[in-house]
Length: 59
Image 1: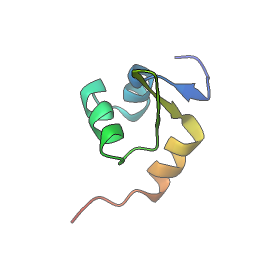
Image 2: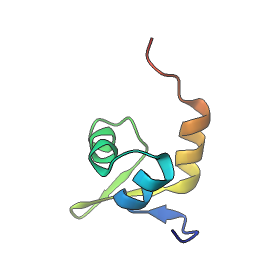
Image 3: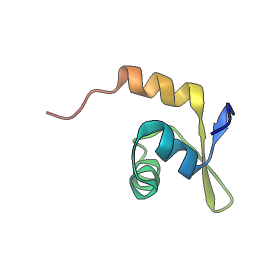
Image 4: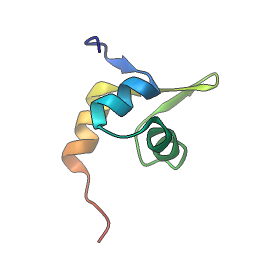
């Protein structure tokens, strides 16, 4: 994986150690910070890092 700031679904899945299916599902549901570009999802790495820092799992 390159050190890009904008990630694809597959790169985001690798970065977060999730499946691409889960990444797309979280993006659709607004759980992950993302943008839809055409038919593809894009993720901004600094936003993902902030999300990880602030994420609180449901109890």
